Image (tube, rainbow, N blue to C red; front, top):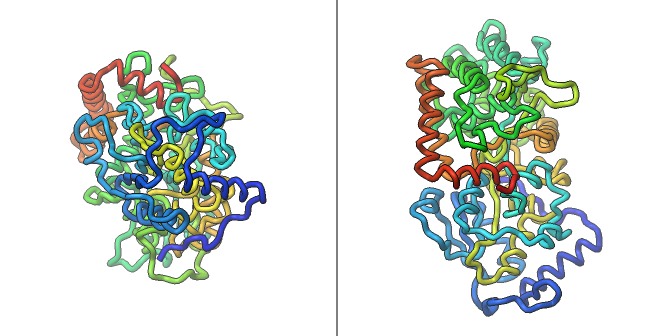
Amino acid sequence: MFNRDSGPHPKSAMQAVRFSLLIVAVAIGCKTKRGEPVPNEAPSELPLRVLVVDDEPLADAVELAWDSRVGGSAKFTTITATELLVGEGKRLNADVILYPSYLLGELAERDLIEPLAAEDAADPIFDRQGLFELIGLREITWGSKVHAVPLGSPQFTLLYRKDIFDKLQLTPPTTWDEYQILAKQLSDRTVVGDLSPPNDATWFGAVEPLAPAWAGPMLLARAAAYARHRNQYSTLFDFNSMEPLIASPPFERALEELAVIAADHPDARHTPGAARRMFLAGNCAMAITWPSRAGDASPELPSDRDDWIGVAELPGAPTVYNFRTTTWEQRTSDESSRIPLIAIDGRLGSVTKDCRRKKQALGMLFMISGDELGTTIGSSSSHTTLFREHQVGQEGAWVDRELEGAPARQYGEVVQAGQNRAAWLDAIRIPGRDEYIAALERAIDSVVAGKATSRDALKEASATWNDITDSIGRESQQRAYMRSLGLDP
């Protein structure tokens, strides 16, 4: 079983009063701003309709919490993302939708979800100021408006064998160049010595998630530090024309380096969960993944072996490509060399456009993402992680048993640092995301198989991206891309 908080997080008396008032408001119905009646508010006996996308454990946790506090006044339905995206339907037949973070743009551009009113986004019960910055300022927004509440958004993290690193007097890599060298060095069993597994067991210097739907985001995570220039918003597309930027030196470099690592296990295509399990089983020195207690818990009890695991942010790069001058530049001393990739997974909650009970819907979202229940609800899903500042120190709710103790604390610090960086890269949040990712992955496969150079493969992917953009509508995609960057077209 995964670990959940058994009691509320400490809070001030005023916060407790506010929360109690919210529950009362949810139970009896609310007034809109300035005491005006809620227009078209349905009778209170109508159940709140909750649609949950690709996450039955999350649906179960929210239903349990809602029933225990408000009563059986909600109806939960689970569907897949594929079912959600089929057709061009204009209705969700739900009041609340809980969904993967990268689908926010799709839902917003289809006009299926409602942005939060300014006073709701500023509500102290929501406590937007308590969120990690990239979540509060970027991941829950579309254009300049808040469209969702967060339930946690994992980021790629580097797990490494601290015992091996200590023995060899190594430090975690801070650049991708260092990472490449270490991956090659540590793939040699003679270097690792008796800390490697038996000779009949699999052993790699590094494992990365290159399974379908994950290889594309992995490439973007590698390219982020090379491509995200401080003076340029456009990284994946030129937002003035929607011309793809992926057939360019930073992405070529990232793909070449990824292919070197993949060559060590060309037939293996791991998900983040599989990469993590390989690491915890002792089959690799480093793994790019993230911890998760939910749905993938080890049967082992917490051990005193926490000194064999280290956790670090993904590497960065001291140089960055300037698309305007088409040259590589040294980063300035005041900017981070690490650029996190956001919205690779994660879960968000929104009020739908056809919601019948908007105040109750908003009350549910504030409750399940708030100080008291955010950890309990969020940690029920394998697609989430900590997302509020006060959750640093509660990492044990999210991490595998083997990571309890020092690695868990280190993980919390890594997430906090990464989610509070000034620059970031989206893992594609505009309509057609799956198609764009699939085109990237075909390029990855061809390079790993030795059938194409990174330049040629990415040129082909870029042409496909243009076709995808045109099929959806170049002007609408341009507006969507600008909104994904926090701009209002």
